[in-house]
Image (cartoon, rainbow, N blue to C red):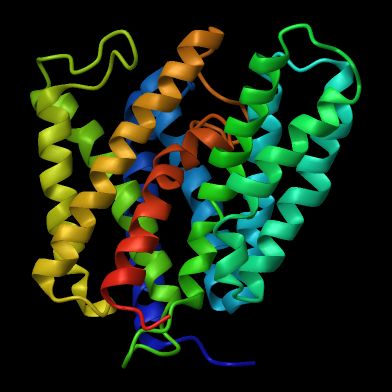
Length: 316
Protein backbone atom coordinates (compact mmCIF):
# COMPACT_ATOMS: atom_id res chain seq x y z
CA UNK A 1 0.00 0.00 0.00
CA UNK A 2 1.36 3.43 -0.95
CA UNK A 3 1.99 5.69 2.03
CA UNK A 4 -0.03 8.95 1.99
CA UNK A 5 1.88 12.12 1.15
CA UNK A 6 3.18 13.98 4.25
CA UNK A 7 1.18 17.07 3.24
CA UNK A 8 -2.02 15.01 3.23
CA UNK A 9 -1.15 13.60 6.64
CA UNK A 10 -0.61 17.16 7.90
CA UNK A 11 -3.96 18.32 6.52
CA UNK A 12 -5.87 15.39 8.01
CA UNK A 13 -4.05 15.83 11.31
CA UNK A 14 -5.02 19.50 11.37
CA UNK A 15 -8.67 18.69 10.67
CA UNK A 16 -8.72 16.08 13.43
CA UNK A 17 -7.20 18.60 15.86
CA UNK A 18 -9.90 21.13 14.98
CA UNK A 19 -12.61 18.50 15.50
CA UNK A 20 -11.16 17.51 18.87
CA UNK A 21 -11.21 21.15 20.02
CA UNK A 22 -14.74 21.64 18.65
CA UNK A 23 -15.92 18.47 20.39
CA UNK A 24 -14.43 19.64 23.69
CA UNK A 25 -16.14 23.03 23.35
CA UNK A 26 -19.44 21.37 22.44
CA UNK A 27 -19.17 19.07 25.44
CA UNK A 28 -18.50 21.97 27.82
CA UNK A 29 -21.36 24.01 26.40
CA UNK A 30 -23.73 21.08 26.75
CA UNK A 31 -22.71 20.46 30.39
CA UNK A 32 -23.22 24.14 31.27
CA UNK A 33 -26.15 25.21 29.11
CA UNK A 34 -28.00 22.06 28.06
CA UNK A 35 -27.49 19.23 30.58
CA UNK A 36 -31.01 17.95 29.93
CA UNK A 37 -30.87 18.46 26.15
CA UNK A 38 -33.33 21.34 26.20
CA UNK A 39 -31.14 23.94 24.42
CA UNK A 40 -31.85 23.43 20.72
CA UNK A 41 -28.89 25.55 19.57
CA UNK A 42 -26.36 23.57 21.63
CA UNK A 43 -27.88 20.25 20.64
CA UNK A 44 -27.78 21.24 16.95
CA UNK A 45 -24.14 22.31 17.33
CA UNK A 46 -23.17 18.95 18.79
CA UNK A 47 -25.13 17.10 16.11
CA UNK A 48 -23.18 19.03 13.50
CA UNK A 49 -19.84 18.28 15.18
CA UNK A 50 -20.63 14.55 15.34
CA UNK A 51 -21.65 14.61 11.68
CA UNK A 52 -18.39 16.36 10.81
CA UNK A 53 -16.46 13.59 12.53
CA UNK A 54 -18.12 11.02 10.27
CA UNK A 55 -17.64 13.12 7.12
CA UNK A 56 -13.99 13.94 7.83
CA UNK A 57 -13.15 10.31 8.65
CA UNK A 58 -14.83 9.07 5.45
CA UNK A 59 -13.18 11.76 3.36
CA UNK A 60 -9.82 11.05 4.95
CA UNK A 61 -10.07 7.32 4.22
CA UNK A 62 -11.07 8.07 0.64
CA UNK A 63 -8.16 10.47 0.14
CA UNK A 64 -5.72 7.95 1.60
CA UNK A 65 -7.24 5.32 -0.72
CA UNK A 66 -6.22 7.40 -3.75
CA UNK A 67 -8.09 7.37 -7.06
CA UNK A 68 -10.19 4.29 -6.32
CA UNK A 69 -11.21 5.48 -2.86
CA UNK A 70 -12.11 8.99 -4.00
CA UNK A 71 -13.99 7.76 -7.09
CA UNK A 72 -16.04 5.26 -5.09
CA UNK A 73 -16.85 7.82 -2.38
CA UNK A 74 -18.09 10.48 -4.78
CA UNK A 75 -19.96 7.94 -6.88
CA UNK A 76 -21.83 6.98 -3.73
CA UNK A 77 -22.43 10.66 -2.91
CA UNK A 78 -23.77 11.20 -6.43
CA UNK A 79 -26.12 8.23 -6.07
CA UNK A 80 -27.45 9.50 -2.71
CA UNK A 81 -27.77 13.08 -3.97
CA UNK A 82 -29.54 11.96 -7.16
CA UNK A 83 -32.00 9.96 -5.09
CA UNK A 84 -32.75 13.01 -2.93
CA UNK A 85 -33.24 15.21 -5.98
CA UNK A 86 -35.46 12.77 -7.86
CA UNK A 87 -37.82 12.38 -4.89
CA UNK A 88 -38.80 16.04 -5.36
CA UNK A 89 -39.46 15.90 -9.10
CA UNK A 90 -42.69 15.33 -11.02
CA UNK A 91 -41.64 12.01 -12.51
CA UNK A 92 -44.31 9.47 -13.44
CA UNK A 93 -44.42 5.73 -14.06
CA UNK A 94 -43.50 6.35 -17.70
CA UNK A 95 -40.17 7.79 -16.57
CA UNK A 96 -39.04 4.71 -14.64
CA UNK A 97 -36.90 3.28 -17.45
CA UNK A 98 -35.20 6.65 -17.98
CA UNK A 99 -34.59 6.96 -14.22
CA UNK A 100 -33.21 3.43 -14.04
CA UNK A 101 -30.83 4.32 -16.86
CA UNK A 102 -29.75 7.43 -14.97
CA UNK A 103 -29.01 5.57 -11.73
CA UNK A 104 -27.60 2.31 -13.06
CA UNK A 105 -26.08 3.22 -16.43
CA UNK A 106 -25.27 6.93 -16.71
CA UNK A 107 -23.91 7.35 -13.18
CA UNK A 108 -21.55 4.32 -13.13
CA UNK A 109 -20.38 4.96 -16.71
CA UNK A 110 -19.56 8.59 -15.86
CA UNK A 111 -17.45 7.54 -12.88
CA UNK A 112 -15.81 4.72 -14.82
CA UNK A 113 -14.75 7.25 -17.47
CA UNK A 114 -13.38 9.43 -14.67
CA UNK A 115 -11.49 6.45 -13.24
CA UNK A 116 -9.83 5.61 -16.58
CA UNK A 117 -9.05 9.32 -17.27
CA UNK A 118 -11.03 9.54 -20.52
CA UNK A 119 -11.50 13.32 -20.47
CA UNK A 120 -12.70 13.52 -24.06
CA UNK A 121 -15.75 11.41 -23.22
CA UNK A 122 -16.56 12.12 -19.55
CA UNK A 123 -16.64 15.85 -20.29
CA UNK A 124 -19.50 15.37 -22.79
CA UNK A 125 -21.08 12.04 -21.85
CA UNK A 126 -23.89 13.48 -19.70
CA UNK A 127 -24.51 16.91 -21.31
CA UNK A 128 -24.59 15.40 -24.82
CA UNK A 129 -25.35 11.68 -24.92
CA UNK A 130 -27.38 11.25 -21.73
CA UNK A 131 -29.30 14.46 -22.38
CA UNK A 132 -30.30 13.25 -25.85
CA UNK A 133 -30.92 9.56 -25.18
CA UNK A 134 -32.87 9.73 -21.91
CA UNK A 135 -35.75 11.80 -23.39
CA UNK A 136 -35.97 9.22 -26.17
CA UNK A 137 -36.38 6.43 -23.62
CA UNK A 138 -39.08 8.41 -21.80
CA UNK A 139 -40.86 9.43 -25.02
CA UNK A 140 -41.16 5.82 -26.17
CA UNK A 141 -43.38 5.15 -23.15
CA UNK A 142 -45.98 7.46 -24.71
CA UNK A 143 -46.87 9.62 -21.68
CA UNK A 144 -46.85 13.27 -22.83
CA UNK A 145 -48.37 14.82 -19.70
CA UNK A 146 -45.90 17.50 -18.50
CA UNK A 147 -43.23 15.74 -20.57
CA UNK A 148 -40.94 18.76 -20.93
CA UNK A 149 -40.98 19.51 -17.20
CA UNK A 150 -40.36 15.88 -16.26
CA UNK A 151 -37.42 15.47 -18.63
CA UNK A 152 -35.88 18.84 -17.75
CA UNK A 153 -35.98 17.94 -14.04
CA UNK A 154 -34.23 14.63 -14.60
CA UNK A 155 -31.61 16.25 -16.85
CA UNK A 156 -30.97 18.96 -14.27
CA UNK A 157 -30.66 16.31 -11.55
CA UNK A 158 -28.04 14.43 -13.58
CA UNK A 159 -26.13 17.62 -14.30
CA UNK A 160 -26.00 18.68 -10.64
CA UNK A 161 -25.74 15.38 -8.82
CA UNK A 162 -23.58 13.35 -11.21
CA UNK A 163 -21.82 15.50 -13.82
CA UNK A 164 -20.76 18.36 -11.56
CA UNK A 165 -19.93 16.15 -8.57
CA UNK A 166 -17.78 13.85 -10.72
CA UNK A 167 -15.37 16.74 -11.34
CA UNK A 168 -14.05 16.30 -7.81
CA UNK A 169 -12.37 12.91 -8.46
CA UNK A 170 -11.54 14.15 -11.98
CA UNK A 171 -8.95 16.43 -10.34
CA UNK A 172 -6.82 13.31 -9.84
CA UNK A 173 -6.40 12.94 -13.62
CA UNK A 174 -4.68 16.30 -14.11
CA UNK A 175 -1.00 16.16 -15.06
CA UNK A 176 0.62 19.14 -13.34
CA UNK A 177 4.42 19.40 -13.84
CA UNK A 178 6.27 18.98 -10.57
CA UNK A 179 3.10 18.01 -8.72
CA UNK A 180 2.80 14.34 -9.65
CA UNK A 181 1.38 12.08 -6.94
CA UNK A 182 -0.13 14.96 -4.95
CA UNK A 183 -3.35 15.68 -6.86
CA UNK A 184 -5.36 14.35 -3.95
CA UNK A 185 -4.38 17.56 -2.15
CA UNK A 186 -6.29 19.55 -4.77
CA UNK A 187 -9.45 17.78 -3.60
CA UNK A 188 -8.57 18.58 0.01
CA UNK A 189 -8.00 22.24 -0.97
CA UNK A 190 -11.36 22.43 -2.76
CA UNK A 191 -13.38 20.80 0.02
CA UNK A 192 -11.68 22.71 2.85
CA UNK A 193 -12.16 26.10 1.16
CA UNK A 194 -15.81 25.39 0.31
CA UNK A 195 -16.69 24.14 3.78
CA UNK A 196 -14.71 26.87 5.56
CA UNK A 197 -16.56 29.42 3.46
CA UNK A 198 -19.90 28.04 4.62
CA UNK A 199 -18.80 28.01 8.28
CA UNK A 200 -17.20 31.46 8.17
CA UNK A 201 -20.20 33.01 6.41
CA UNK A 202 -22.37 31.61 9.18
CA UNK A 203 -20.05 32.97 11.90
CA UNK A 204 -19.70 36.43 10.36
CA UNK A 205 -23.43 36.54 9.75
CA UNK A 206 -24.14 35.80 13.41
CA UNK A 207 -21.59 38.39 14.57
CA UNK A 208 -22.24 41.27 12.17
CA UNK A 209 -25.10 40.26 9.90
CA UNK A 210 -27.72 42.96 9.40
CA UNK A 211 -28.58 43.20 5.69
CA UNK A 212 -30.36 40.24 4.14
CA UNK A 213 -28.77 39.28 0.84
CA UNK A 214 -31.56 37.07 -0.53
CA UNK A 215 -34.37 36.91 2.04
CA UNK A 216 -36.75 34.89 -0.14
CA UNK A 217 -34.12 32.25 -0.92
CA UNK A 218 -32.10 31.98 2.27
CA UNK A 219 -33.27 34.25 5.13
CA UNK A 220 -30.17 33.54 7.24
CA UNK A 221 -27.65 34.80 4.65
CA UNK A 222 -26.53 38.42 4.99
CA UNK A 223 -24.31 40.76 3.01
CA UNK A 224 -21.97 41.12 5.99
CA UNK A 225 -21.80 37.35 6.47
CA UNK A 226 -21.11 36.78 2.79
CA UNK A 227 -18.36 39.41 2.56
CA UNK A 228 -16.72 38.37 5.83
CA UNK A 229 -16.91 34.68 5.00
CA UNK A 230 -15.75 35.11 1.40
CA UNK A 231 -12.74 37.21 2.36
CA UNK A 232 -11.85 34.92 5.27
CA UNK A 233 -12.14 31.78 3.14
CA UNK A 234 -10.03 33.42 0.43
CA UNK A 235 -7.38 34.09 3.07
CA UNK A 236 -7.61 30.44 4.16
CA UNK A 237 -7.06 29.41 0.53
CA UNK A 238 -3.98 31.62 0.28
CA UNK A 239 -2.66 30.14 3.53
CA UNK A 240 -3.10 26.63 2.10
CA UNK A 241 -1.01 27.37 -1.00
CA UNK A 242 1.78 25.18 0.46
CA UNK A 243 -0.30 22.07 -0.34
CA UNK A 244 -1.00 23.13 -3.95
CA UNK A 245 0.99 23.94 -7.12
CA UNK A 246 -0.19 27.56 -6.79
CA UNK A 247 1.50 30.65 -5.41
CA UNK A 248 -0.31 32.33 -2.48
CA UNK A 249 -1.81 34.91 -4.87
CA UNK A 250 -2.95 32.21 -7.31
CA UNK A 251 -4.38 30.14 -4.45
CA UNK A 252 -6.28 33.21 -3.23
CA UNK A 253 -7.72 33.79 -6.72
CA UNK A 254 -8.82 30.15 -7.05
CA UNK A 255 -10.23 30.16 -3.52
CA UNK A 256 -12.26 33.27 -4.34
CA UNK A 257 -13.63 31.60 -7.48
CA UNK A 258 -14.54 28.53 -5.41
CA UNK A 259 -16.20 30.65 -2.73
CA UNK A 260 -18.26 32.69 -5.20
CA UNK A 261 -19.46 29.66 -7.15
CA UNK A 262 -20.21 27.83 -3.92
CA UNK A 263 -22.23 30.73 -2.54
CA UNK A 264 -24.32 31.21 -5.67
CA UNK A 265 -24.71 27.46 -6.02
CA UNK A 266 -26.15 27.40 -2.51
CA UNK A 267 -28.64 30.09 -3.50
CA UNK A 268 -29.71 28.15 -6.59
CA UNK A 269 -30.26 24.99 -4.56
CA UNK A 270 -32.14 27.01 -1.93
CA UNK A 271 -34.41 28.35 -4.68
CA UNK A 272 -35.22 24.77 -5.71
CA UNK A 273 -35.99 23.83 -2.10
CA UNK A 274 -38.25 26.86 -1.66
CA UNK A 275 -40.02 25.95 -4.89
CA UNK A 276 -40.67 22.49 -3.48
CA UNK A 277 -41.61 23.77 -0.02
CA UNK A 278 -38.88 22.00 1.95
CA UNK A 279 -36.14 23.15 4.32
CA UNK A 280 -33.58 20.40 3.71
CA UNK A 281 -32.95 17.89 0.94
CA UNK A 282 -33.04 15.06 3.46
CA UNK A 283 -32.42 14.03 7.07
CA UNK A 284 -29.61 11.53 6.60
CA UNK A 285 -26.88 13.71 8.16
CA UNK A 286 -27.85 14.93 11.63
CA UNK A 287 -27.62 18.71 11.89
CA UNK A 288 -26.79 19.05 8.18
CA UNK A 289 -29.84 17.73 6.32
CA UNK A 290 -29.23 15.53 3.29
CA UNK A 291 -26.29 14.86 1.00
CA UNK A 292 -27.26 17.73 -1.29
CA UNK A 293 -27.28 20.13 1.65
CA UNK A 294 -23.55 19.40 2.05
CA UNK A 295 -22.77 19.09 -1.65
CA UNK A 296 -24.66 22.14 -2.96
CA UNK A 297 -21.62 24.45 -2.77
CA UNK A 298 -19.19 21.79 -3.98
CA UNK A 299 -21.16 20.83 -7.10
CA UNK A 300 -21.14 24.37 -8.45
CA UNK A 301 -17.51 25.09 -7.61
CA UNK A 302 -15.92 21.74 -8.62
CA UNK A 303 -16.25 22.04 -12.44
CA UNK A 304 -15.02 25.65 -12.40
CA UNK A 305 -12.06 24.77 -10.18
CA UNK A 306 -11.27 21.72 -12.33
CA UNK A 307 -11.18 23.68 -15.59
CA UNK A 308 -9.28 26.66 -14.15
CA UNK A 309 -6.58 24.26 -12.93
CA UNK A 310 -6.67 22.17 -16.11
CA UNK A 311 -6.18 25.10 -18.45
CA UNK A 312 -3.88 27.05 -16.16
CA UNK A 313 -1.53 24.42 -14.77
CA UNK A 314 -2.11 20.99 -16.32
CA UNK A 315 -0.46 19.65 -19.45
CA UNK A 316 -3.40 17.31 -20.24
